[in-house]
Length: 248
Ligand SMILES: Nc1ncnc2c1ncn2[C@@H]1O[C@H](COP(=O)(O)OP(=O)(O)OP(=O)(O)O)[C@@H](O)[C@H]1O
Ligand SMILES: [Mg+2]
Image 1 (spheres, protein in one colour):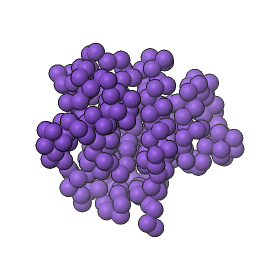
Image 2: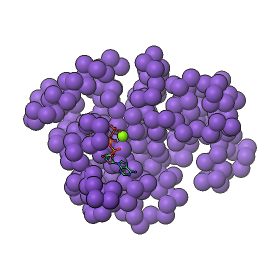
Image 3: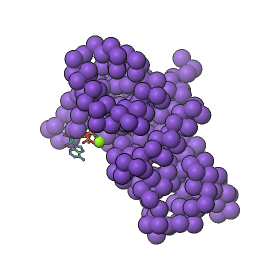
Image 4: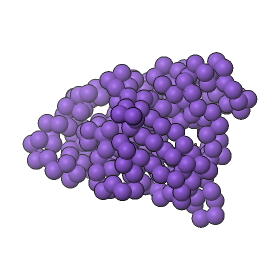
């Protein structure tokens, strides 16, 4: 299966006595855009954290390009799996360009000049060419999040993970971040996205997964989950999300 990029195979995870993921399995091919939805506490962030090994699993395996992430060098894994967080996680004392350059120098061994050129190109890609010298405090939340995306893209990841990338943003700033994500999807980036934005899910997702209490309740293309969900709970959850977050 040359097209398969990610295989999540029977993953169980717990924090202490609390079992969070209860046997999760799914695959992603290259260029897939998987949207993961589910109630608060269902395990969405934990699932993403297991993929880039911010959290250990109890059972099962996670394969990236056929190799268990538990057998990969941690730096290689961080380079190959980009992560974008809800709260941006930028360094306040560094400019946009320096925030993007940092990983290029530390993780990829670029020279200062090479890192600066690549960072400028990535900022351009997310529409921020003219903000390269701004500090995070001088940028809107939407701009800060786009710097976060540029920083992840600079690593040339095989897979991008997004954990509610627009949840901390004022409504009028959500669209510009979703637009960058749509462009990435069109360019063929493989993306696993936790989001409440159902407009994005309908348009950009190849598949939607509904997670509830640590189990995948339903999994399929957007047409199926929105129009012909097999499970009653999927139907009511998606219709509620669409009422709240259907716009963009
Ligand atoms: N570091 C941690 N230590 C202990 N328990 C945790 C930790 N992180 C998450 N949990 C627990 O694991 C469960 C799943 O949390 P998780 O953050 O994965 O859910 P989520 O689906 O991302 O929720 P939300 O929509 O609120 O972001 C919750 O019960 C949570 O309290
Ligand atoms: Mg979460």
